[in-house]
Length: 150
Image 1 (tube, rainbow, N blue to C red):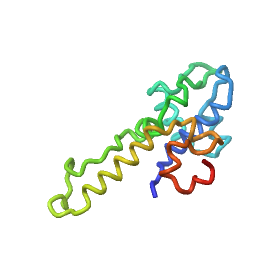
Image 2 (cartoon, rainbow, N blue to C red):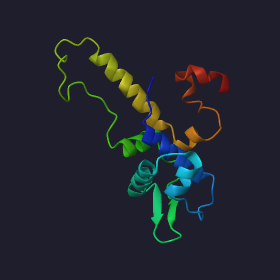
Image 3 (cartoon, rainbow, N blue to C red):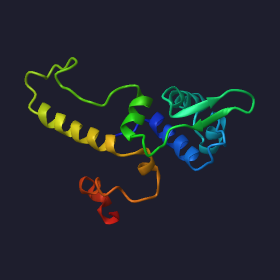
Image 4 (cartoon, rainbow, N blue to C red):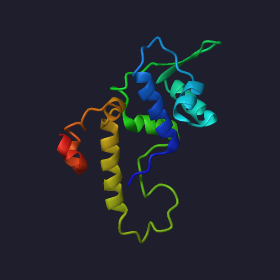
């Protein structure tokens, strides 16, 4: 099972909340924390990262906050996760120090698995993920638990 980083979860919570509002409504980190009981420092940092990536826009001042800048239909889950976690999700066993590289018998299968997951995450939009709609039909064959919804 793939583990989703807690900060990515907070980003998804923020984006879902903001996507359900008018673009004129500003959202603050404090508001998100109060509503979802998330830690302020982490939530504020996530919102700042989303701002730096151009997904949110920050409005300064007493009545400031953030508003959603990017269309979530155009934002892939992969880009969001890489933005928040500040790392790429491509895997190459031949990069980096791995003491098993010379004797490993699963480097190619693991690379195929990684390529497959990256492919899915790069085609899954945040909007598709956050809406109550069924799993996109292009993903249903690879997600057996969602077949009853396709």
